[in-house]
Image 1 (spheres, rainbow, N blue to C red):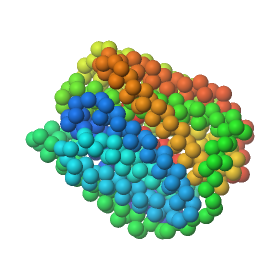
Image 2: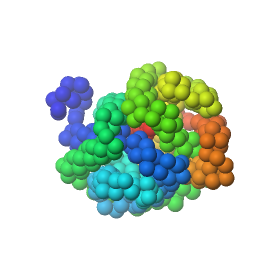
Image 3: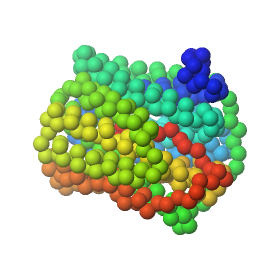
Length: 423
């Protein structure tokens, strides 16, 4: 594998730790794409109501930011590799718990979501920080690009494979198979983490300082407001659309095809956007993608069929890369020019994650309140129409961001762009 990567990378120096981090990232992506979408369907088939699914997702987005803060402290006091290992262990425990609880999973929805949120928090904090530390400026583009290929491949193959397995087996046997596969993949990631070189901790954790930086840095405040808006859309879109696909088709295989189509188009568009969207076009790209994301909702809002869902998948498969690539780049440019960015990079990542999840939790709480007061089938289309505006508000916040000349002092480098199934 090392020789193959060297051939692809050319003259770039490829370290053992970089390869191990790519392997861990690939195993994580395949495991999550294989099972995560279908956990919502598994719970839906047991409970048959949106409340169960919403509380499961609420558990994820409440515990993910809390864990991010804890993981940030550990990363600066102990070791980044230990934090990564904790994340993968908790993710493994999540799938093991689903397997053991089985038919009673819907009763423990919030607990399961909490375990998954803890796993996400530890994993992504450590993975982001290790990316900064393991890659060098000359190898960073190769790492991000190759990781993106692995993520896109997992996004295309995982859901389709899972849907095929579930559809070909009786009752819930297929679900047990894919959850077992995910568990084994995470065990493999844990084993790989033991071969990573230990990363000694340094510095104190200044979370409050970076949080209060909003009062002194207008660009940082605008970016955080944009991330709340992002979270408002993601909170309910992350599970409602998958449920609608399943309700419409009554087929896990059809849901796998939906995700294959979406991820396949995104795979192509990420290459195009990365090549053609230059810094001067970032804001226009964000606006264009946000408009497509919002108006595509109306294709499925009040009348729905599988054909309409596939058209919707095509549109958001195009729109997400158009928004995500320039939005991520702009975010990291703002962080890179923030005060003591190099020294406080962990804290900036933690605070950003906190604000995304504030938006997600807010939208889920409003969703739960609304379906308590009104029939779910009546109110959900209106909620999607309202919260679907989230990415348009991203543009309204970032359009006023202006960056001076690029300075290298205290600069923070880009993290890999990840597409976490934000439907």
